[in-house]
Image (cartoon, rainbow, N blue to C red):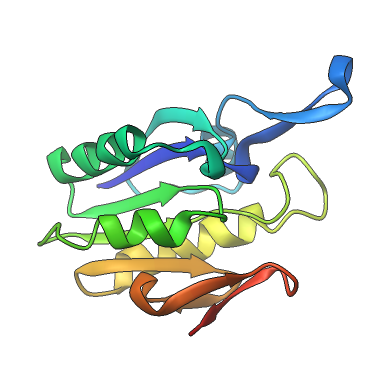
Length: 159
């Protein structure tokens, strides 16, 4: 069983026409997984709908609590990319689980989004990596303790 916790972020942004801007909507994960014929046992829980820049210490504590309390030892967390590293570092004290955070640089609803690839890659990573906390983005796996988002290159890098 893989527990998937969604927190919002760009991956779940939808175009809100009345304001001509994007807002965090209902998670796209259940539809994305169904459309891509993902049959590995999983359950999706939407923890919150926030841009990662708006996450508070209380939000991070709620993520930590959900991950720690899960009876699954494989956890996937979808998260906004701006503070994904911070949340990943905050989960490092949870032992006996493989925890993978992923997200997207473009909303899943856009044709040129990296969301589907990143989720698929993260699903493979959470099933094959040893226990620990990881970030899986754009075909690479990172240790949150030694990773940074390179905003100008639109990717994560080891520091």
